[in-house]
Length: 217
Image (cartoon, rainbow, N blue to C red; front, side):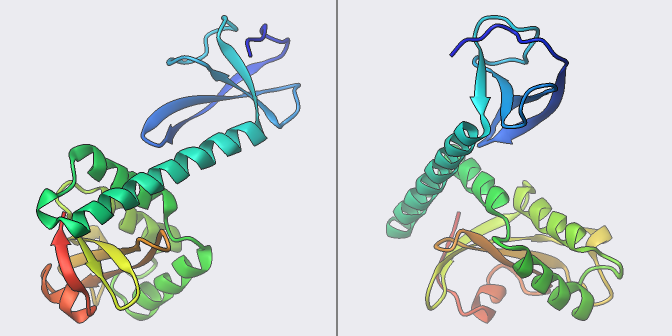
């Protein structure tokens, strides 16, 4: 639906990464909060030209949910293919989808994140004293996106997991910190389960977690 530019002040709100694609989102003062203005084509809105679309929050939620569900389905299908044919591996696009999905899904609930923070930061002292819940979360997400991180697909007794294993940053090394940091993602639940530091190499920590049939991605 094309609309003429309504009266009112247009303010650039933020640029979101939506399934790996930048999307410009605007708020419009003087209009109901359920409305926003987005460009129908690529590029930022620059003054009410044809092609600008008026979108309700409900429409955007449905669109975003469809995109996320589609991403999750693609990732799970690619992991299933690799599980059946380990030597096939993931393409660059499939690996990008995996990282995007894990980063987007995060911890599932704040309770899980707070519990893991208590176990590994407050009690385990793997991260420096004073590390907040948000900083612990950023540390896990940093590991997931780090180019040198190794990624392995494996199975526990009940679920399939994707686990990220990489070097601990010096700034993230606490009194009981270790050489490597691990972030573990449950494929079926589509949530991060934990992030912890370990001295185990990429094979030993899998044995300690009781993981079967590891496939390095």
